[in-house]
Length: 124
Image (cartoon, rainbow, N blue to C red; front, side):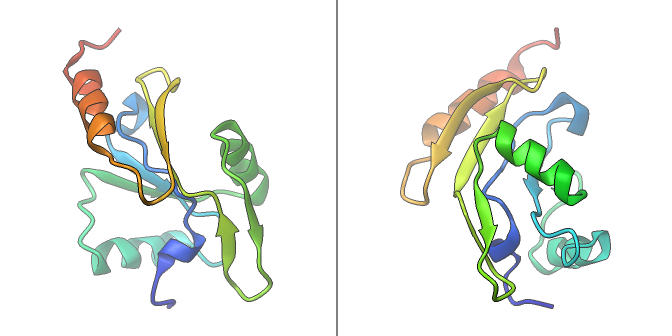
């Protein structure tokens, strides 16, 4: 197993999705490597609470459609690694993008406030 799954995860963390019971989600972009068993092992190794996190994968076409919808670009580097957008995207309960933070330098505090507000709001 690779030492860091981060190299193949799109930088997508979803703060509140009704379909995922308000869980955070990360999307794997290489389904041939990031199998359900591999993602489970990654979650276990990194202490990700299954009640709060969903590590997702899908077929190449499904991954591309979701990545495009979220504005995530990625490409294989030919070394088993990927170059990809680093983005945290917040969706509301209907799956509408309400906020996003790009890069690793930005503060997530405003996003955390938006998440708290979305989770506190009654379901539609």
